[in-house]
Length: 187
Length: 187
Image (cartoon, rainbow over all chains, first blue to last red; front, top):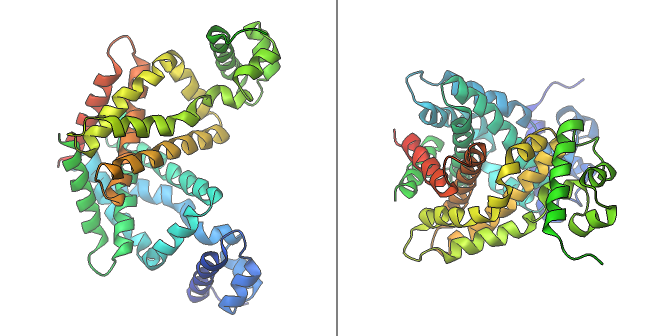
């Protein structure tokens, strides 16, 4: 039996994104994806449950990863600064995905079902971060607001980074998005 | 044929929330709701499509209402201040719902299907607000971040208000939530 092969996984992901873009997410099939990647259906099944999973594989680990990053941020940091530090730390998890992020975003925007799945994913992350912020002393109500705002900052920073990954790094994008938001909030 | 009767609508809503709370959202039936309200199924159908609609009736008007409120805010206000003004203006739309808000929130938290519907509703509001903020000069990327943050501020302010409606007004809660957020954002 073949070994775990990150290259096969990446080829399948790239082929899927191409086909979703060319034919539409609804129309593209797993058979087409494996054919384009030059791999078998059996190999596909080793990495992904179905074609939707190509877009969301690994996301079930995100809530715990983000919450842990908040927990492990410098104890001296107040809650929202801890969350920003955690976002920067978590950015490493996405570094490998940045080159395909714009394409993935366009595919998700094309389908109400995928949009819903993306919202569910982000809500699970937000909920896990609420718990971690509470452990750092934020009230339930503040923790909810800060976690939602942190998710908005993360999405903004990641989109901007994936539009021009060569020009800057993710940490800078997070700090700039947070600073921009702070300026908007000050009348 | 009976006239449009806001009291009947309110009695149905109150009966539904009671039954959802007592028996669980999944178990409560429209027959039970109408029986508790002392009204007919025909009357129920005049106001609501189904039991889920009791929790979301009117929400299809929210995106346009919020976007219009942003468009009509004082032209001198910068984007996020215009959004805060719009949130305050839109608060009037919810004043009649505040007494049932905590109960509604608990029902929604009990069901993944309802949580998803609530997220879809908020996403539609956020998207409409993005357009209105762009018309006020914000870039696409900033408008998205500000609209998401505005939704978080709105939810926070509305929850706090509905926990203690007698102590303060909604406008104050919006201003306080925004000020609290600004303080968290400033290192």
